[in-house]
Length: 320
Length: 246
Image (cartoon, rainbow over all chains, first blue to last red):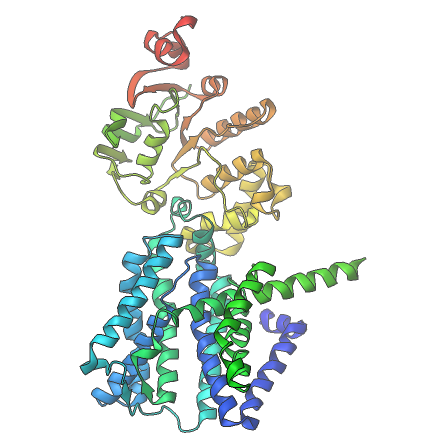
């Protein structure tokens, strides 16, 4: 395998492995609160990684990522609490249900482009949010559903479960981006009207990509709310659908690693405010907005874009 | 001139209206295997609309398009491309942020599963050489010169050996020298057995290349014949070349 020996020669492989070891050891020495933040952050990263494929590679600014997070979560909650399935069976069901909903949503929405697509998906989030509130017998509405069984006992294992899912999505994203599928998504992003003239069935690839990334987001939702053991419609508002977008954009759209950096900044960093005085913690939501604006202004390529221009600069200096 | 083959493309009573204005109005004609058919006509006479109807960009209101005796009327663009009709565009259309090689790769991708890597790279080398793009293969398409981008469009249309090639003003915005290169290229494409329909505003190019010429005005066919016949046709002179030249 040439690819593995190639990887062993790269500096970034060792940086990645070191980071991975750090991430594996970290929860063992973290307080319950810090672990909780890390688990929340990890699920935000997963949602953003999925959105990143739709937004960064395919070029569709979806604002309904948390709908699929929610569909996966409610599949977990309803299958276990109402139907009595084991949480692991429910975990298998959640991507299937989310895939179907994602595919059905893709049929009308992906006929729209750019701003119109963004508005339609935002409205979709609003509709789903209203449905969750207005079906108290099924969803528990604001009061929610309690007693969702946990997939695994300890919080640390939950964290590892999410890290495993992040790694799987990361590897799949890299493989996808180098395969014909990635090329097709890039073609769709750069000129969707041109691509069909080369025999590319753009509609099929758009819908499948949207549905597959929805399914993966659904798994993240199922894991997170199995960890929470409680779900309510309050988690799925129009405002919360903005987080995944912020994570993906701040990290750097269209790069496999971008959402991970974005998650650290957008979800992780604001937690620092919680530890401060009450007056400071009120500034938490503003922080996310400010970071987003600053990153977009300074580097449209996000955090990964900043890294790339810095390393590019250093390389050029090295050559001189 | 070599003997022409059987019909490869048949247009029958094709109509397309845009808000009550007939862009293509009951148009019928036949393209024969191996020929170069030139489409002429003043601006807005329906030439590009015709290409868009053939390649599934627009749905026609009525009429039929037959390709190799199969009805392809109002089929989706990607299906029509897979059947063997390739086209270029009036305004340059490539994937600007991708390299020349990646552009070609995207153009091949829908049928790439049919062949192995070595065969694919040979094919790419050949088409790049043919379109004089070998030396810029790693450049970003958006950084190429105008003429290079137009040739890249041809390369992308050619890479999968289409049966029928629709060229929409390939020489638009090109210098005399670049035009001659394009004319040479189009002739070589025909020698490979590919049938060509071309829209051309440049009279010199149209007359030099076409075996047969079709003149449109207001979406209707007003004349059809060899380039020699067309230049003396009354209706054409009136509608297209201007009365005072008659």
